[in-house]
Length: 315
Image (cartoon, rainbow, N blue to C red; front, side, top):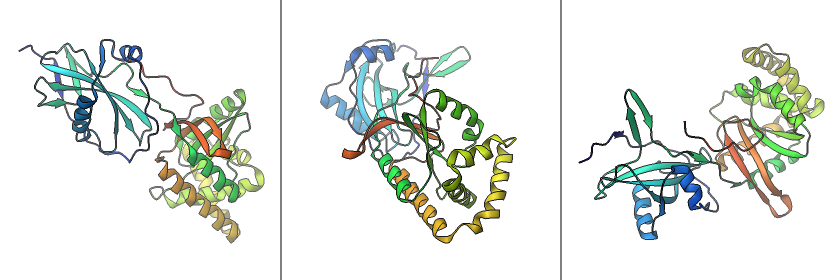
């Protein structure tokens, strides 16, 4: 038997339940570019058999979209497949290679190539894709903000980008000047979605209530820019904000305090349904029509960006 230069391990982490819409279509030329070799769509019966097997190997909430047979240097001992799966927690379509033994008795879901002392994972040229998704929940965020008098507009412009944010977002602090500068250059309206969940300290909730209450009179940009731009570092920013929060939060009228707090709870529940758990997350809206409840675009987890990222390139 031909000696194989790979060793393997099986995946086993858990993710959150998906909500994937229309299945993407893939041309053979696109797939050939990804794997750099021959691509063969599987027949329905064979694909369904392999999908059933992969469901017990991949994280339980991944959705297997499509499976393709690709040529392999290890044939005939191993059969190689390109699998496209949707990960709802990351809002990504991941491209994975899997291998089956000739008799289909052993499955390898991850493989490593060994060259001298260098070990590297064998992955497709484009390891991930960003699918367009339904963003109808953005319309709910807008409704909650309007009904609760929440100031969420940071900058004004023709194109709207949403940024899931809270005071504990260090990346937001580090990139503050860059964010404002790019928004002005690109004529972008940034809307901040304030986010608090049970895993954050209560300080985060109180700081959000204080900032949003103050912004109702002074404007969101003016309030945040005061703290972001005049702080020496992230620790100084949090220290100054916490000090002001606990100095003035008792002066917020009870009705205003309860209204903002209720709106933040509604936003948190809306983001949970949308499978958004990470700050920062950028939401790029591609198409929107509130009249018919249409909103579509891209969700980029742990990213602050003004455009959809390009596909990963092979190292």
